Length: 131
Image 1: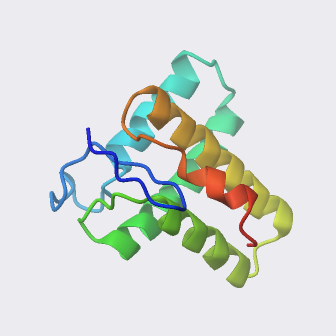
Image 2: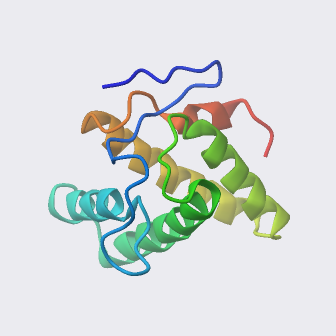
């Protein structure tokens, strides 16, 4: 696995760079999001409302991720996470909603870290970066 270290922190996705999604409209993060939601449903036993909230937040992030990275999987997810949070702020989303999105991303990236799909949690930079 590649290190991909940067001063801001990084995460390395296991997906192949430049590989298009398998289904029309599917983002490059879609398989990982599905795996995470299945983990939350089966292993953590989350309620349907929680799963729906995670799904909405992560689908929105997946679309943003795709728009910023096309089919190239970046070595550094930190820049994408921070720019996504900034885009939520600029869109006028409330601070509680942005905090929920950040919590969803933290849980998602912690799952990817445990699964060995990233080498670092890119949401760590959000603790120190102004949104």
